Length: 271
Image (cartoon, rainbow, N blue to C red; front, side, top):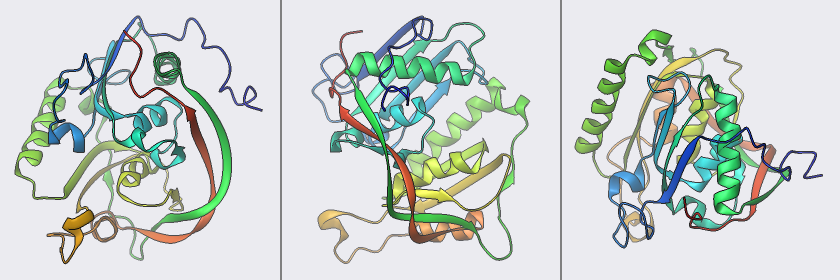
């Protein structure tokens, strides 16, 4: 069963990065060894480089969790990954050189091989009927903007502007504030980002095709002791999705395919 799904096959020798380094950012050889993870990396993640970017020969993923790495490697949403609690707690930095003329699909195969090898990972798939949120279009239609042109996405000046804007928003944001800007994304990619802040898998019921530009600002609800009598200073993710994107998250049930991490080491083997 697992072999048929491609999860137990030996990684293809040619599907490997030329050079790759992956470190737990607060691990023994990470940039914050023995120190608390700075808030920026604990609450944000950055995927830079690779095919279609201004730096196609190199990828640099910073602040990413195991859930994010596996979701990216297997082209799944974040909510389709199941495993131990630390897959959302431990943050990593991955830097790798990508062979010339590699496309995005090839990079994902390389990422599968790397994660499987460095974390000694074992996986299986299963399907379940579970509580979900159905993402639908509200009455009046979506408020998504047209996607940015391809030449804008690969323009180093535009990319630098986006990075400066992201840092400026982070520096000025209020407690619990979350923001993402996607210049050219399918609904599936938008769901990837929404899945981080909701407690159920999200399934696409919009019937929207193509790519869009999406900006969303919302506030996560306080947790633990901070949650008592606390009122978020702005809209929840549910309110923001409706008001800012013209979409809605409706609670219901649906069948979801999960990729389950049965075994993995928390710290990667030496680079």
